[in-house]
Image (cartoon, rainbow, N blue to C red):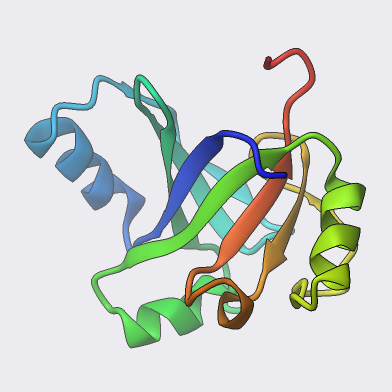
Length: 140
């Protein structure tokens, strides 16, 4: 059911500091500008890799869901793994049918790539927060 790995989400207290790591230490050469997603409570930036992306996420505002993660992991760290799916509603319904908990209301929201996404609870995914995103049209 899952398609290709789209990105790994990495929570960070500072996107600027994380960009320095990926650019200056790891040699990444294609990094997007940081932008705000207030409806999600995050700042976002993508480190583009030959085969995937790293999504850097930083809290935006006091109600950001990333605050809780950073309280437990003050330096940041892997937050989620994102896979593409062809149909987000079918994927959501399949996850529910298999007993997995879809977070939030269960209704897809628009993610950083501009396509619908859902998150599946880590307790049902071997301890990993899974994001499923509808593959961008024309991506394959």
